[in-house]
Length: 132
Image (cartoon, rainbow, N blue to C red; front, side, top):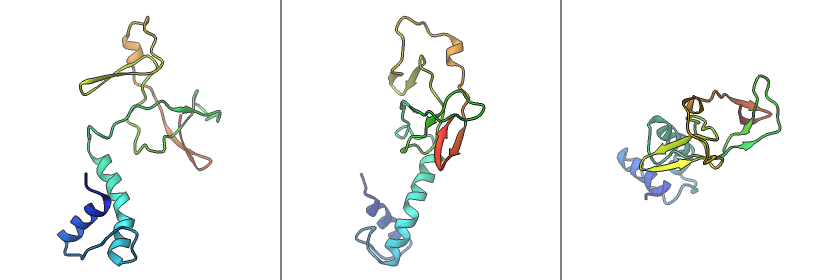
């Protein structure tokens, strides 16, 4: 896998912009790459439905009350975008593997009502991202 510096080197090579040894050096090229790379990487990851960048993760509940919502959760720090929320008893098919949420009750049979989309909204609450 190419490093951030190698990816920036390829971009600089394509525009004949010089070279860098790493993103921490004080050259104009390295400063520009260090500023632009994270933004452009995240935009690229959001721009397509890549198979490698999906994650199913249990959300951390918050005690914070959000008006009009029954539950509030901490927004994961490694999350670029929430695609959907998965219920406690929903089976999720991802590629060739099957993921089942940790709260799955093996005696419960899947019903269509359990697979209904879960409404959510992302808020900025006290300078923290919150999923309600």
